[in-house]
Length: 489
Image (cartoon, rainbow, N blue to C red):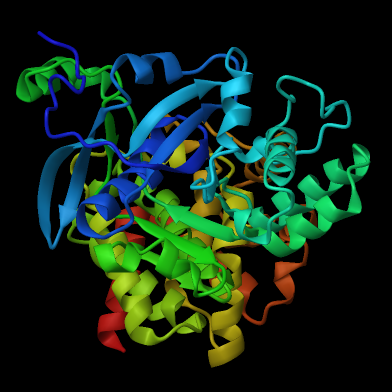
């Protein structure tokens, strides 16, 4: 069987090189490069991506062997149905290995049509390395590599104001664009680059913060033979992604005209402030994940999909999101409900096995950042406690007992957290007083919560009651009682 190439994909097109991309991994190919592919096919964007391999070991050789083509499989829920579809992406023109083709990389800076820079170099990638030098080929850090590229651009066009870039990092750190710009300016100072370059950086370039959201499982090792048979060609770079996608870019509205994702029907938003969107994602998507995990796992379920499809746990999760999390957020209600609907569809994705135990990693700090703000804001707005979030907190304490019936739970958290729970549960004697003691000590563990949760009116008593119910009656009966309370109200 032939390998994917432009000989196999005879309809594949070539476009002017407009985008420099740091990172050739699965996520960028299934997210950014796919969006550019869609824009090329449905708008007048007419641009391709040059992919730079930021590390010495990478996949650009493999990409170039396939004429920069690869297949994206999108699998997931679409308008309530499980949908699987695939397409050949032809938006990448070529890959460059910085370690063997540094001159080619510099030459890109001389191309007047280059306009966008995107990156995904992992969360650790946006970092300053004081040992980087302008003369290195290449620099060790990603911001060092970027600064050298921008400086060569500045020199090539004599500081022309219309030759700057729109720079959008996709690394999963808060305020990623601001942090990247800050480090680029640090390098300009370290390397004693002229003041005119610093002015050009500030005035001719636009650094945007961004939020990305799409689950990308990557290369389908388990069923690649079946996929190859279906495709009729070999593709070493097949990438699997879910149907859902969201890209929130904080930046001026004029960028929309140059990057017309909205005209292509893509879920890419250009906003003045991405904070509410980040909060929405953390509270609804991540918050629901963390809150459902201990409840559902102790109920006897193992995956997220099983949970939302379940006749008891499904309603628990929906009510948690719609009745307790959404009322604490400030975006328009229809936007929040639409996002929540998409989240529940994603949770149902039959093509992705999302195991609860893998989500349970570091659950205490996750509950603090993802769920506690909703719990506190709910109380602040309504002067009452959110029943399901409180119950989830009680279930979390039960989870850290480390047992599901007779089965041992392999807990994964910081050592001090594991020691705290080990010490607390070792004193448990089955009485409500000992449950209250455990709850009081866990809620008072300020190292995790950065506050004493026992000071939240009624919380200690409510968590104690729920945990006692879980311990004496079992999770199934305790959850059904919580849902029954709503029916009775």
